[in-house]
Structure formats: structure tokens, C-alpha cells
Length: 337
Length: 253
Image (cartoon, rainbow over the protein chains, first blue to last red):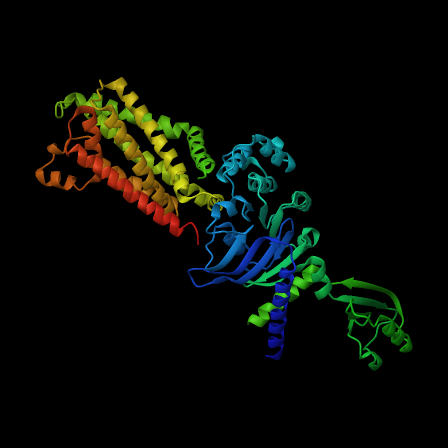
């Protein structure tokens, strides 16, 4: 009970932190205020989402399956009707000014949904027209060349590989020169090489000042390309922060000592440290705050020497975004329970 | 207004017809030719004139109406159902395009295809029988209004259907029987009085009768009533389409 309350307090503090971080951002291209979505069956997919995204930034939305990532994107793009709340794109309301907002947005869906019997060129040209832009073969050619699709322009989509189809979906989303691009799990089911190609495409788009919001299960993807990371779980946006800040604030650092001789148990003289004895006593792991004035490492090494504990190797590790993500999701899930 | 969006949908749908030329144009023309050979030449030669018109000529408006109705419905219903089925409808829902523009794109293309098909059948018929059209403008008005109205109905069907069976059930089990029982191949005067009265509840009777009047100035109901009924039907279909789209029926959750 007590732990649950503490976790709930931590989550509320994180939300306050998010709000403070939002205030310090430059003028946002996307502002989401108190967004809620409850489906007909009563399932609440989004709970009071507040988020601001600046022009030209890359935001990665992390979350387990069913967390609400796709619903959030769908609500912004007009595919799902929000139950309440407001979404502004460059200051325009997505309901009242849907023509303006939607013409600024490109969406790459999670599923490989393509017109199988169309050629690459015609489906990309169709998308440009659908979004209200006059034909511009030069732009379509540039998009296809940038995505290495130019030599496939006359191919029927059904003849393309999964990776190529994913590129076609990106080309369709870029055909009308959007300012904001949503990528819903863009690298799901693609091989490592193609995933890296996708990251390069995203970086290239960022250099063109396109704002990118991507959802992903791959933590390495967020670590690799995102400026900020948002974590969503059970419809709640539980954290949004700069990727580096997040790792610094929530990441733990560990000193791992490989002992020369295994220990049965840790001596009492070391009880004041956060130590764990692992690998059948062959390893001591010390967890510390990397940003504290005193990490305690020097004192620990001195105390180890006094206790005649010798070690043959040592190294340090820092928790990855994945560790942070897993911890956060577990904490919020337990708090909600 | 998103003219480019509307045109994109229209061109996309028309391109689909070009890809499926055998199914869209050649097959209906062959079927219609068979009707003329069987009903017009083989059986028709043994039937007396119907209301002063040879039987082969008498069935031309009915055949045009049969094709207009079934193809308007199937073209429009498939046009909107297929993106729903494969999932590409997300693009239309996220595009800066209004309900009116979407409907004009899909229904406009479906109606265009049906009208072209109707005219091709008319030309095909001219190879088998001697045709005369007393009121060509009224004929085109009936053809255009019917194609638009039933394309709208097809659009409604495509929005409503969530499997291929539902998509085909209305054309097969509703429209085709109504056309066959709506005086396409006979005059209702040939029926017993009771069934003549029953036929008046068949909306297709009014369409066939109106179109036949534009050809031969013979009709089973007043041509003004025929025109009014098709206009009312079109307005009703428009209302349903707008309701479905604006409430997100089976499209937006």
C-alpha cells in the first residue's frame, strides 16, 4: 500500500515535470491539451494527454502494445474522434480547421496497407492529389529517389518486398510536403540494414525541418534518433523529456567489481553501501548516483582494501533507455493496480 | 474546396476501370448481346409487338436500366469498400477532404462508368435492332440521374458492408429481382390486375417506364412521376451518405 502511494506520487511528480518542461519549449507546432478517448465499449484508450512538440524535433513515443500510441496518432490525424480535449497544429484546431491541419500532416501507418495493383508512381501521385496539392512530378521524383524507390517507380506494389512497401508508405506520406510526419512503428518487422536506412531517412527529414513523431517498441531506435522521449502506458503519458535528461535523471550507474576470490557474504564493514553480491560471490555490484557530489567509489575501494577484498577487474555500466522504460512501465502499472 | 483531392479519387477509380476493362466493359456488352440474340431474335421473333414496338426494341430501355443499376451499385460499393477492406482508407480519413468531395469523387467515377456502359449498350443494341429515341435529352437525364442515384446507393452499401457477401447481396438479391419484376422485359399490362397493382410498389418500374417513354413515348406511369421518384430517391441516398460519413459510421471510431 505504502509503496503504491509512493509510486503514484512519483508519477504525479513526473507529470508536473512534464508540464514544466513543456512551458520551457519554443513555440510548438503541435499542442495536445487534455485529450481523452473512450471507445464505444467503454475502454479508455487515452487519459488526459497533454503534450507540446516543437518544430523540427523528433519525439519517440514508447509504450507496450495497447498503450494508446496508435490511438493518439489516429486522433491527431483525424482517423479517430477524440472524446474530449483539444489538438492544435500550428495553432489550428484539428476539428474546426481540419483542412489546414491535415494538409500539414503526413502519416505512415503501422500496417503495410497499400494498393497492391497500383504502381509506385501512381499511388504516390494519388496521395499528393488527395492532400490537395497540384501535380508536381519533380517533387515525386525527388521523394522516390531519396527513398531509393526511383528504379521501382513503375513496379506494381504487390511485387515489392515488405521493406520496399514500407518505403512506399513513407513516400506517400511525404508526397504532399508535410511539416509534421507521424511514423507509427516504422521499423516493425524490417531487417537491421533497412532499419538503419530508415533512421537515415528520418535524420534527413529532420535536417529539412520536418517535425517527426514516431512510435516504436525498439528502445535503440529512440536512443538513436529521438530528441525527446515520451512514455505512454495504459493511455497515460507518464513521461516526456529530453532523451539525455531522461537517461541522466532516471538512469542508474553501476560499478562492477570482478573479485579475485569469491565471497560467501559481504562483510559488515560494507553494509553502508548499496552492494549486491552476484555470480556466486565472484562479483560485487555497486549502484550509485552518477550526478551526486560524492559517488562513494573512492571510499568503497578504500573499505574493500581494508577488508582485504581484492579484485582483478572493474567496469561501470549505465542503465539504458530500455531499463528506464521497463522500470517506468512497471511502476505505473503497479500504481494503477 | 479540395479539387485536387476530388480529382485524385475520380482518376484513381477511372484507372481501376481501365485495368479491369474485360470485367467492366467487355463482359456487360457480351451479356447484353446475348440478351438481344436470345430475347430479341430467337424468342422475340415469336412475340407480337408490345404496345406498338417490336419486342427487341421494347427491351432496350430495360436492359440499359438493368446495367445502369447493377453496375452503378457495384462500382461505387467496391470503390469505397476495397480501401476499407485493405486498410488504405486511413489515407482518405486523414486527408484534408470533406464528405462532399469524397462522395463526388467516388460517386462521380462510378456514375461516369455506368453512363459510358449504358451508352455502349445502346450502341450495341443498334447493331441488333432498329432504334429510335423520341426524347434524347430526357433519355440522358434519366440515365444520368439513375446512374448517380444508384451510385450513391452503392456508396452507402460499401460503407455499410463489412464483408464481401454483404457487398454482393443487395445487387443480387434485391436489385436484380426488382429489375426483372419492374417491367424490363415485359409490359405490366400483360400481368393480372393484382400483380399490376403490386408492381406499382416496385421503384424500378418507374425508372424503366420513364426511360422507355424517352425512347418510344410509351409508359406505364406518368413520366413526371418517374422523374420525381428518381430525384426523391437521390436526395434520400444523399442524406444517408452524409449521415454515415459525418457520424463516422463504420469508418471513424
